[in-house]
Length: 593
Image (cartoon, rainbow, N blue to C red; front, side, top):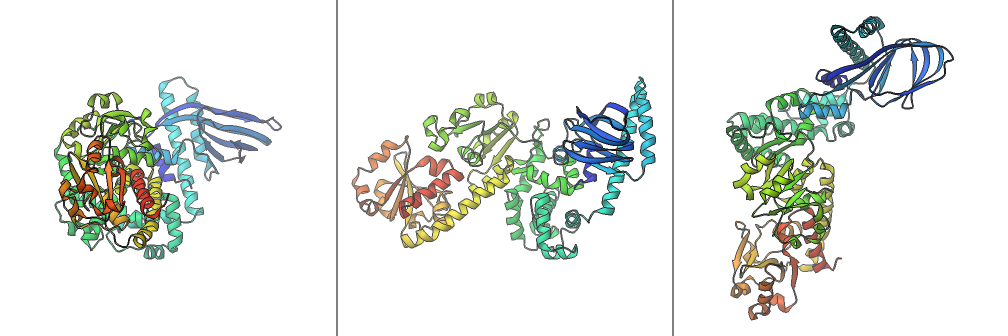
């Protein structure tokens, strides 16, 4: 359905150029006329009858019929049964740059200057007068006359849009999605459920869910949550109100539930968001002129002025991170990642960064599933020491880093808009953020659903096979042995997702790892060991396995030690790597290959 309000917003912002105005007569029996139009156009029939094809779509043209089509449309006039006379106006219209992301998204969604539509006008007299004046003005060489022509064209657009809007109001059923959205915009702080909303608008919950999904790609309650989160963000950044008061102000009586919901939708807690906004306000703006920039008050105001067409898209394209809030004004094409895990996330979504740091300076440190793409990815130094010259030469339009680069963040943000994500955040949350950045939300959810199905299947099978036997993973490093505890991010895969049991020494929930001596290994006394190794520490790993302390371990004697790649288990904390960890566990314990 054509939404007239969307077209009017864009007509109010575009730069307009009139290319041609002409009046044409075609007699009865005239052969068909076919042409491919080089610009957008309006055709208004003032008499006659004929068939008109627009890219093959048929219209019956009679007195008082108007239709519109875009550049490149093939126009055919045929079967003239009464002499046809019509006005044709050819024009071009474009948004002046720079302009807000909201307008660009609305333009992409609406395409007002390319869309095809036609209808019989209800009040022809005003149009005929204005078209005649427009034709006369176009024949005059003076600049003032041409300016009048442009003003006449705007009058025609206003008249046509007004008549089209009136026809829609009379002929079409009420826009339930728009009504529901407006109700939620105005009553967001009140208790609202899918059932009560559907009942209020004389619909069924199922029908409303379907209509919202078709129109906005999300359900009505998801829309309500986004409205509430946006309101909460405004309160957090502009007031000193407490969390409980803010939660109640946006419709949540349970502040703990609100806090969890806020973090799920934004990626950060309410307190972290408030702190980042305060920091952003106190800092001097450095990226205002960049194509990718911080959210402005103007864009926020417009986002709420057109909720259905703009607010959702703004919410989907705003990335909240450890250093503030970044609104993606366009889809980034050259992304530089300063943590290898982000390369894993992007590859899982069918994309890849333009440049990435490596774990070490050795290119062979890339896992096998990344080696084939390495030729197309510019090396940017290492995680510990990014190469600024390489980064500058790459000229990315977006940099993704972690708090590991906190000290150099300001330098990074001078090169390109920079998003700082929490390094040890659950990979699932990070994948959703990367999905939003890459405009691959659906693909991200598919990856997560596949992983969820996999671990649900394996969890019960592992429990039945292992009978609470303990499992741990260690890493020989720096002439010691590092034990990764339950607080480690990969440990969550083993102990939470797969339900495995850690040994007592691994139950530390504050430190992600602890250091064991070779002599202290018997105190660990796990039933099963995953031993993480890499090229850098291979010699030390081999040496450990020759010692009596190692050979006397119960798990070693029962052949319950399994070698694993440290880079997969530790560095590439993304969906591909974590799926490989799960697959290796399944292969070891369930013979699943």
